[in-house]
Each structure stands twice: as C-alpha cells, then as structure tokens.
Length: 114
Length: 115
Image 1 (cartoon, each protein chain N blue to C red):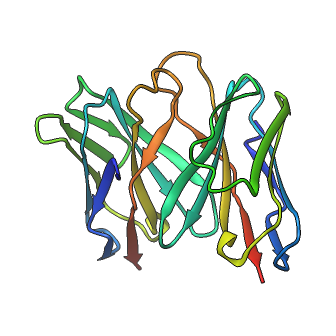
Image 2: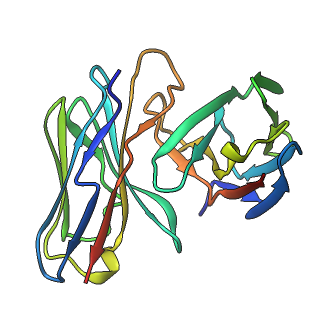
C-alpha cells in the first residue's frame, strides 16, 4: 500500500500567493523527503526533514513534520510561475536502513498562474 | 557536475521488440534505482543495486524485464518482448551512502511508447 499520500491532488493559485501541500504516511519513519518534478523532467530533491525535527526552511520552502499525526506539509511562499510542477513526498521503505529506498506518493500538481 | 544520464530520451517501438534503456549514475554513488512512472500507478520502484549488485528486484513486473549493472558507471533495463502496457516513463536515480538519509538524484527519464 502507498506509504505517502499527498493532498490536494491538484492546486491552482495566482503568482505571489502561498501554496500548501500535505502528505500523510502510514508507518514510522526516520526521515521524509520532498521532491519536485517539472514537466518532462526527472524528480529533483528539495528538502529532507528528519523524524526528530518539526520544521525546516529552505529559501521560500517551509516543511513541517508531525510524527504523531504521521503527516507533513510543504509550504511554498510567494509563489512564482516557475514553481509550476508536481510535488512528491517520499519516505524510506521499512527496513531499508541506509539504502535510501524510498516510497513516493502520487504527488500534488501545482499550477501557478502569472 | 554531471547528473544522472539516461538514454535514449524517447523510444517508440513495436510490440514484441526488445527495448534497452541505459543509465549512467553520478560518479561515486553506490546505489542505483530504476523506476517506472505512469499516470495510473505513479512512480514505482522496479529494482535497485548497491555496488553493482541487485539488492531488491521485487518491483520488476514480469520476467520480460531484466536489469544489469556490469560496472559502477553503467546500468541497463531491458524489456523483451515489449508490450503496449509497458509504455511509461522510466527513470534511473542514484544516491550516495556517505552519511544517512541521502537524497536520490534522478535522470530525465526515457519516455517509452510501445505500439
């Protein structure tokens, strides 16, 4: 079964607005990662948050993690048209240790209108 | 730095033909992953290698699929014979084991269409 599930599936906002995407997962994790995929390209790693962290920032990105609710959110502030992409959360497969074997959610498709 | 390089970028072939997808991981990365992405099933892990050795191939859909990693800088994913339902985007990714929780670095994929 899917480890990470994002919502909403699709999000459309105006440039300058904030975008929030959520991810829920089912089992214990040691970290959660967010990736971006532009149309026709591969996934690009955005940010990793460890299980003992509650919040992390990287530029206009803010990620939160609530292990009690098994959920994470990705906030993109002051969105730009270039942020238009699909966003995926990913969590390590149980027992994968340091292999980095990840399970990806279905993704949120974000459209930022100029 | 060169990223993960995949070839070809696009492949269109007829049902029954053999298809070979190629991947060059980032130099120094110990792990290599093959994924398949479709609208219906999302991103699925097919197989991954550690130090050129296949570790987990439980995601390989059928015996028609095979993957090899003859050396640290090259891997192939082969489909023989190909079927229309194999149409998808296939991604290769690599990661380092220098420290825990390393991110994966993806190539731009091979868009495969089986007619």
